[in-house]
Amino acid sequence: MDSSLHEVWQAASGSPFTPAIGKDNQFLLAFILLVLGFGFSGAFALNRSVVSLPTLAVPASLSLAYVFHPPGPDP
Image (tube, rainbow, N blue to C red; front, side):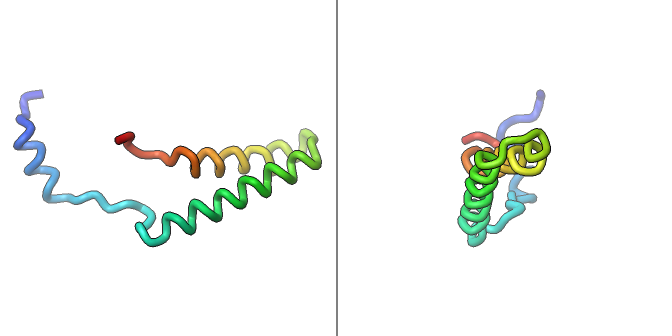
């Protein structure tokens, strides 16, 4: 890597980061996913079968995982 940090900084200033979900909508999306995750988890707890595993348990775990650890670079 022969680029200096200053060159990388100058190149990155031309394309600022824009998130896929706006700052005003992040709380609403996280709250909806959290409610859906707990709802699906509760429904799966009431009816544990092989059929409800892909329809309830997998979406519940994915939505809760996204809320508690969203994808992206770690600070």
